[in-house]
Every structure is written in C-alpha cells, then in structure tokens.
Amino acid sequence: MGVRKARVDDGPAIQNLVNYYARKEVMLPLSLSDVYERLRDFSVYEEKGELVGCCALHVVWGDLAEIRSLAVRSEARERGIGQALFKSCVKEAPGLGVRRVFALTFVPGFFRKLGMAEVEKDALPHKVWSDCVRCPRFPNCDEVALVADVGKDGVLAVAEAETPAAAEAGGAGVHRRAAKGRQSSSDARKE
Image 1 (tube, one colour):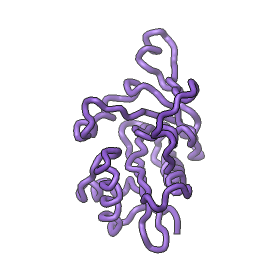
Image 2 (image 1 turned 120 degrees about the vertical axis):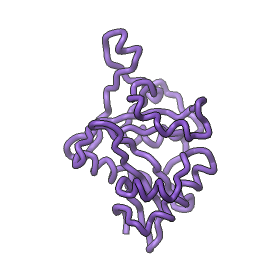
Image 3 (image 1 turned 180 degrees about the horizontal axis):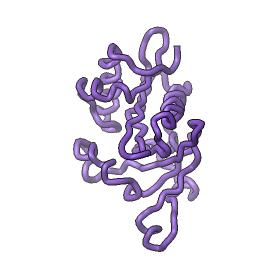
Image 4 (image 1 turned 45 degrees about the horizontal axis):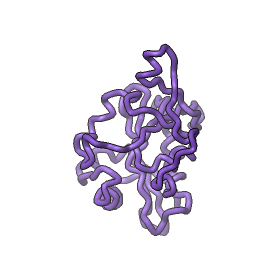
C-alpha cells in the first residue's frame, strides 16, 4: 500500500514500533495516550496490511515543525521506507504553513542524505526542548540537530540557520560536520 495518514486503529502499532527503538535509547518512548493525542501528526507505511514504519510532522512554533518518531521495522529497513515517510511529512508541511523543518537524531547521515543541514542545537527555539527532560540521556544529550527550509512545493532547500556565535559575529552560519568529512558509526545506519 505505501504511505498514508495514520488512523486510530494504528495507535498500538505506532506505539510498539516507537517503543522498540525507545528501549534501545535511540528514541523517546510514547504512551498510547501520547500516540492518540498526536495521531494527526503521523504518517505510516503499510505493507501487506501491516504497519512497517511511521513518522510524524509535529508543529512546534510558528512556521517550524519537527520530523519526529521516524521508525521502520528492522526487517523492513534499507528499502526506502524511511525516506518515503520523511518525504511524505515534508510534502505535507506547506499545507500547514510550515516553512522549516528540523530533526533531532542519533542518525544524522540519514537526514543529511535527504537534504537537511546540521546546526548547533542552540540555533533552535527553546520550545523545541520540551520533550528533552523525558529523555534518558538528558542533560548529556548527544543528538544532532538538522534543519531544512521547505518550499511551497514540499521540497527541501538547505536552511541557513543562525547560530549564537554567528549572530554575535553579525552573520548567519550553518555548522556542517558533513562538509568536514566526519562520519560517526551511527551515520552508517540507514532507515
């Protein structure tokens, strides 16, 4: 079937998939109540009647939304399902008035390949950190922040994010570890 918007009956499967990765401490856990409250944020990937992936586009502030809870069942990975879910959420963004998306991830290479640019976490509004206190890694988080601008057509353009240091220096800047050729072992994983 492919990508579609989540329905109420998808709630338990979304929760199970996200919490599988939460137990590995690479995602935040979601209660079933959390899933139902955010159900309209979710898109799912269905294959042969089974949910094999999910991703949410969560509006955070003004024209900013987070790509979050992107998860693909381990046996369905490396087949483009994560990419299809990501693109579906990005395509939905302009219809909501969202002009910029961000992701906080331990797998920045996946998001870089899709056109997002790494930024310092300080470049994101403080509202973004409301979920951080629930994370088992808080306050020593090593997630990477990435951003991208979204065109009216739902296609990404690399965002120019102003970091605090760049703002003090009077210019905009994007911190791009990828441009320096560094790659962590988690970058090698693909959705």
